[in-house]
Image 1 (cartoon, one colour):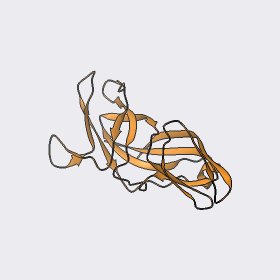
Image 2 (cartoon, helix red, strand yellow):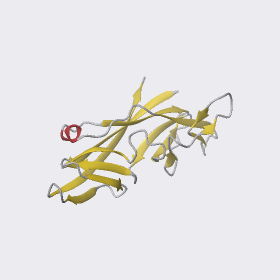
Image 3 (cartoon, helix red, strand yellow):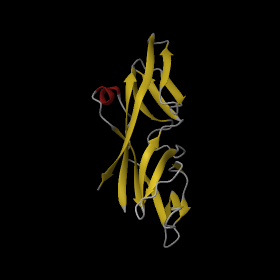
Image 4 (cartoon, one colour):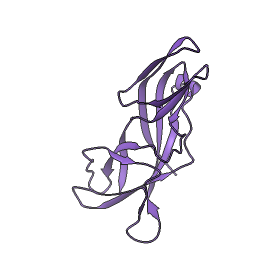
Length: 166
């Protein structure tokens, strides 16, 4: 079993606290990424969707996981379990320093997550405190005007990485 920490970065213009709509441990937030089989190296042709709120029983033993998937090439089963409590919003300071913010931890058996895809369901706030909810990042960026602060706000240059953690 290997744990992978999904970390995100972006250029935030006049914005801070980029995170899933209901916080970093949002049970309905969908994480989309491809899976690479650790047995044969096959990469899933399409993104797999995993969320904290969706659980399935493990085939053997007790307990649950968030995803069980069979590799199309070698037919081995693999699991992905979402582990809450490690995520933090991406702040203006982290963005300016070009640092990555931790978003979610995944415990993977038989698979390695790769190629995270940004989608909808995000929230962010302006430096003046105006909240932008339901932000869709699937197009690769977000741009609006903050009437309270009287300036443009923008999210661009979205990046992500999966880091192995112990």
